[in-house]
Length: 133
Image 1 (cartoon, rainbow, N blue to C red):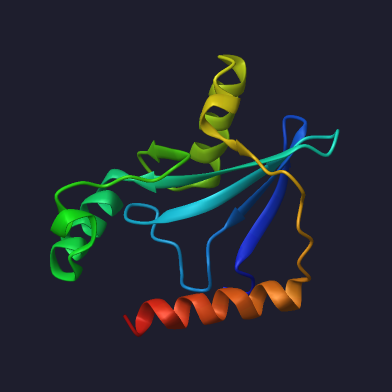
Image 2 (image 1 turned 180 degrees about the vertical axis):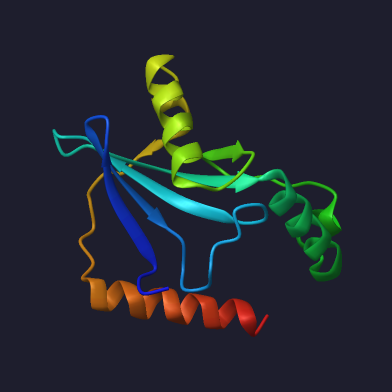
């Protein structure tokens, strides 16, 4: 993987999917997604697969988090069958059409501009911290 994120234009908005340095498993993973509209407003949410939630809960039974894996929560959570660009775009389009988008995605108060070099370094440190836990 060359970059820890991908950016694409779709139906009048820019979509940035932050996948991290490790390869994305479309069946068992989660990704942060940012949607930016032409007026500059941008929103964030995290997309999960059901299998990933199960994997995280099993991990929590070992770490003691979330009452030893007895529950799971995430703010701005969207669950999809597969983590693919197409599935993410379909979910966003449906939420926009149904006027539910702003109920799920959080509006980012001020965009933080991070250079690609700094972003790569942040993701690398984050991934290393996950491997050491």
